[in-house]
Length: 296
Image 1: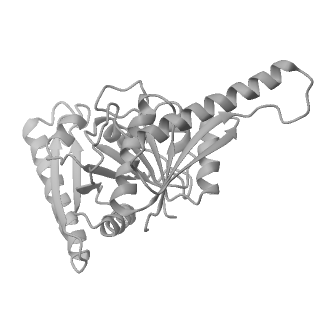
Image 2: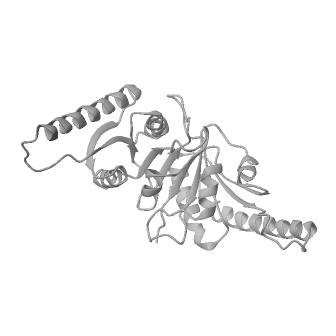
């Protein structure tokens, strides 16, 4: 997987600027094409004598142009950028159709406003896109900002240890290799309070956690050896904590880092579909997130 085109779902607000800020890194660091897409509601397509229809169409055209002007001002010093308008019945449908039209390799979005600053929320439109997309999706945290010369310093790929998840690791390795940045593979688990019967006791719980930690370390070491012949540096790390926030915060994160997740096996083939744990991981992530669709 060698990415060449990023399509940004842009709205003239904070979320839109956060998405542009993230996508700009890809365009500037590696010369990929950045396509900024503004989706507007479809106006009536049949002839009409109603003055209101004409005024509404003019309003949409003006609003869309103003949005594009604002995006151009934000990306004034960025090359390899194109701006498109796309009419659709919904933003999610419009962005997915535009991504197909532009042969996009990645859709970049800003986080929903329902989440906290510094965090990611996938509510509403983002969820609709993620459950229908054939494309990888990158999401910038709320309040995200990166300087014009920022770069992606490292990718961290979450690995469950299951054989079915190895495809995500190899895709993450391809992306890291294409961008010439290091890759870190991490496994983490949360000790749910309802995971063990009350009579089992803390000692038994610790024993099970230690066993899982050891198993995860073995799995990560095996995968690292499989990738050892490649040029991309690969690190591994394991954590077992009480909450997802504690688990993710137990790792060090570089300013220009991105977390990569794979889609749930429960999802439709070749679609992005998040399981319950993946949703929790995204919400707890302190960095931007990329979710890969299933390969098969």
